[in-house]
Image 1 (cartoon, rainbow, N blue to C red):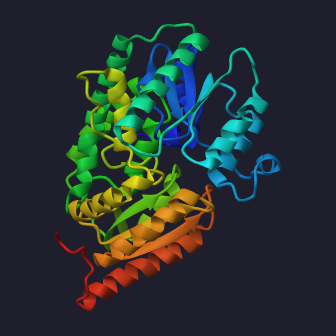
Image 2 (tube, helix red, strand yellow):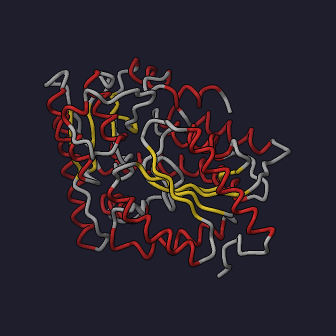
Length: 388
């Protein structure tokens, strides 16, 4: 991969973000996949996924946040208090869980410019019925009105539709790259794909069209794909450090599928409809396509989709990574493990911190997991998922 993808992953204030700032554009930080990217891209605005790369401690954040708040939330708080987000024009925080809501509660305490600063907490429903879609449609309109009032421009239906068209076109560039992972010998590693997905959420997407096109073309020119000891899926909560996937693949595995924030979430690349009420289409897309573990009524659908993905990508085993103290994923993991084992799919659960620590332990656990998959093959056990 070109060096640009390393730059995008290593620093939030990367060359493309700096270029956008020099052009007078305004970054809005967002914490969650529920953030409506097309709406946050109107005019001079552009969204960035909030991260805390290379965070070494959370000693400042720990003063304000409970010790049982997840490390992702505490790391964002630490960066906020250190002034690392000084160049942001504001923050959009979908209240997807109580942990990240606490981060939103503290944002006002650390404003660097009271007049310039924008903050909005998106009220995201936990169900996906018509009533909830209607509510979220109204919530997005309220959000848009706040953007208009603060930044001083009008957001028309035509403006939103134009951004949705760009959103759909960009996703169409990503889709064929994602599809390469289904091959018997994938042309892109899990580490490279994760680096791509983190990168596209770390700069204005219009500045990434050419780099993504070039990456797709370069991959198609490769004559030799990847093979390894096992084809793995990694799933779980927030994961924006590619060293985690790299450590797993360093033991001979190939990560061919994923299901986590800043990964290739199922259906997330599907287009947003341009027919009918454009606002409702936007709300429906984010409520029904993200398939987050917080949507409790959709548990059975998520399990069915998970099994389908294992079959589609010919996965040999699943690693579930869970941020310590993440209530949502700790609950969802229980049913996911039961369902995977019932289908004869090897599965391993790993608890982790937000910072990439304990790599030696991760490597040891991965080695043991791969050996168990290989032993099942030798013994003639069910190492592959049962075919439906």
